[in-house]
Length: 143
Image (cartoon, rainbow, N blue to C red):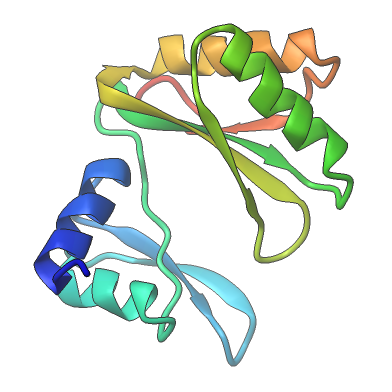
């Protein structure tokens, strides 16, 4: 079994980005909000233990370690096609159920890459599967 420190290290290695700000979701009022405080181990532990949602900002200057395609519908066909098409390009993509509706497909990179390149790859995959208007995160190429 992994220790808390190992879980935190693994989480931080995948979900890298800005460390000075993060997002969360107010469970009582059902509103997303930005928190302008550092991302601490406590913030991540609260998320991993189900106490408080955590959203990270993947774009640092003009680089990112992850690109996400956001499918805002309940049909799983698009996300599954995205995963299969990504694999044809040698990229492993992962699908998760969104908290509101639909699915997110995650492409992780072992090192920070120019966001413009990551977004182009995601757009290419989305064009291949006939869903070019699907939203991509980060939404911009640079801060």
